[in-house]
Amino acid sequence: MTTQPMNITLSSQPADARWGDKAILSSNDSGMTLHLTGADPLNTIQRAAHKIDSQGIRHVALTGEGWHLEQCWAFWQGFRGPKGQRKVEWPALGDHEQAEFDRRLKIIDWVRNVINLPADDLGPEQLAHTAIDLISEVGGSAVSYRITKGDDLREQGYMGLHTVGRGSSRPPVLLALDYNPTGDDSAPVYACLVGKGITFDTGGYSLKQSSFMDSMKSDMGGAATVTGALAMAISRGLNKRVKLYLCCADNMVSSNAFKLGDIIRYRNGKTVEVMNTDAEGRLVLADGLIDASEQQPTLLIDAATLTGAAKTALGNDYHALFTFDEVLAQTLMGSAVSENEPFWRLPLAEFHRSHLPSNFADLNNIASPSHAAGASSAAAFLSYFVSNYQQGWLHIDCSATYRKGAVDQWAAGATGLGVRTIANLLLK
Image (cartoon, rainbow, N blue to C red; front, side):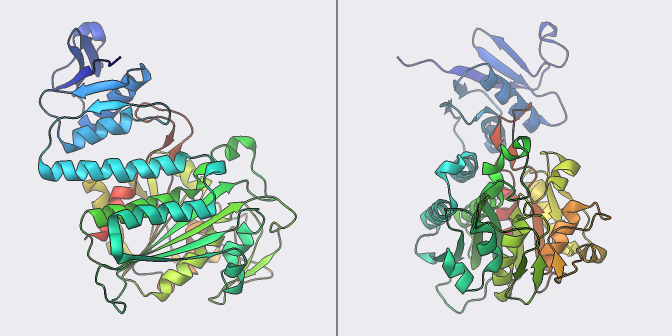
């Protein structure tokens, strides 16, 4: 039996007093009305859509005036949830808006779906292959790639990724993907994207409590975000060469897992003493950043669900941005504003690079106890693996990637935030 959709209309007028002074929703015999009387109408639409979904309404039609691209997208961001099916009858959009809306539905929903998958369904190798499938679908013959996994990583010197991933029965994987629309093998690489793809993070021997481990299927959120960003940029017309590096592994406890006091020797000559196995994301990203730096790109962006410290500072509401490059920081923030995505810059200075002393190696993988700025020291650690870290490099600590529980405007699970901003930056 086919259900009739609930009609949803927009209004700039406040709701009738019987619905309450600050009501964003009212209903009558013809459907429901969203009242856009606040300072942020898109946020109001998203919150109202999530409220509609929370009432168990799964089939709606957006009708009347005012439904354009951003209004439709805000509705979908709030209406979409990780369980069950939803059906939306969308209003007619112009050709350009429709094309952009369709690519968001395809790519950002892919990002949210992949992050929400249980770790049992998405291991390191599956993550790499699903990323290849997405980029190949939009990039076609301009896409080539190489997968290196397991002991081949050790033999080729990818010691951070191999060390972290060797404790799992699922081998670690490095995906190196090349999007080269020029067709010229000698074309310069404009940008490199590096993503943390920890498909499950127990913390290793520095074991997480259950309350911190229960969302660690999402620890590959950085890899999903940069993959989605590249796909989005390609679908928007990217004509420059971009390379994508995904550093994929499980961080598990086993007789073969890495231990506190181990020393990792990287290909760029740096040695790192492991004093916390739960600070593993930076260890795998280091390998990807070394490869990316060798390409001498104009722009190098890494994205990772890297630290709890960034979430402590920003909650799940903003992605944290770190960079030494003032001009690039402003450019990224401009992209975020134009895409209506939340980023916030946190400090990264030269002195943070001295917060990682080790008695036995060049670096410690965590800051000394006297330095509490965990997100900044993690970014500083990564800078040792970027050859020109003061210019052209952005580190994104993906605080806004995933929500353990529903809030006013979001269902539980992945948000897909950040994809559009990075794509926007790639096209500047």
